[in-house]
Image (cartoon, rainbow, N blue to C red):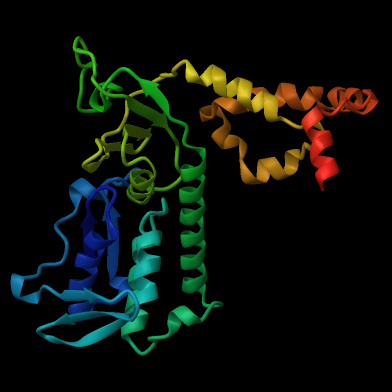
Length: 315
């Protein structure tokens, strides 16, 4: 049995380095155990020996072509052509929180390189179905993060906002900042920090911001994007005065005659509500909706402004 020890929050590139050598040495999936440092109750991480022994001459080279195929080659084996879809799916599936994702990816890679090059086209295959489920879940989590992150303007720099496992106390903030800093807290299901960071970097490239999560933080200083996987000791409660303005805005645009709670829950699940300031008003607005709707129906039509009459005559 080969024990493969992966770093915490292993990326696709880091997994691929291990998978190359295993494929090169013709090690079957059933003979491999994958262990990541961030796995819960992973006692084998500190007790097991190092992963498979390999020398520098056995390192495999991978050249990825997004439109075509990814060629896995080595000096001692025949080149293996991997579909580009495997690379794309692999980068998504590696972000999933499940513990069997490494084994699943390697099992599919083994099948692709051993007489099943078109396995990813077989939608009803058990491994392919599971890969699709993992990718769909990660994509949905990433979509929700890009939609439900709410920034607050704060008076502290990103590294002064919260305590991590590597800091004993908050830093001294005697010197005021010369620029605006924005902060947000989000709780993703999967490790989508890298993908989300790229999205927000493009969306808010001119601002300095931090997005903190239970598994790490994303920092952007208008020049460099960094991801820190230090675990937060506690969730910071930081809100600016703009939150009250947003509350007024959301209440003013609420339409009591078109309330659809089931549709809202489907698009905005309740597990995200406690980190979104506007959701604090939903219960009150929903309970008042029937009475407000009746009062709107009972009210007489309002007199249109003068400019509306002129526009009607011109048309």
